[in-house]
Length: 136
Image (cartoon, rainbow, N blue to C red; front, side, top):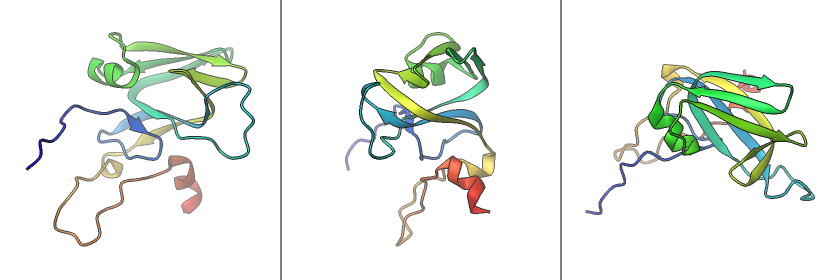
């Protein structure tokens, strides 16, 4: 039996969070501001759960995490309050630039379902929140 990694990992956009709450999802990522985009780019991180997400003059996104462990996992920060910079209409985060982002709420019943070993077809835990509203 191989050892399992119990260290919490940062989620990528499209994955279901394990905790309910408010999140900021980054997507339409690129490695450079000047990168020529022919497609939607890559999925970025999901940051949260958050107490708030506030934008100031489209220059900074101010986040406050619910707890310090999530701030460390998501942003490698020892503080609950974290500021993200907006550069040329994109959020700059850890060396990448994201042209789209969404703030969304995850209800307890929408959280990541536990993995199981007894189903022939595993449960799907991927979920793109911006598509959720259009599916109804």
